[in-house]
Image (cartoon, rainbow, N blue to C red; front, side, top):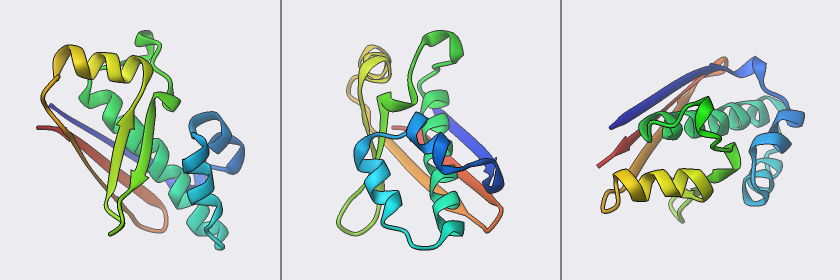
Length: 118
């Protein structure tokens, strides 16, 4: 299953960050000094969570929360996700022995994120 999302960077700001992000994600984004990069990172966070929800087949009626998906980075900087709540329940139900691979890319004004369950 594949999920993809694209977003315009200028739609995102710090008040939205608190609605969609977990403490580790906020900490990661707050380390950024450039306001422009902060907006790109918030947009990236939103987009990857949307892409994961789409890959899992979770829509608005599923009551999944943005905070059920956590974006993290390994030591090399590669992004990965941890799932909680409804998102984890859905993955365990449909894709128990599968992993979720993600990719994020951005330009100054747009972000694209892809999630693939393999």
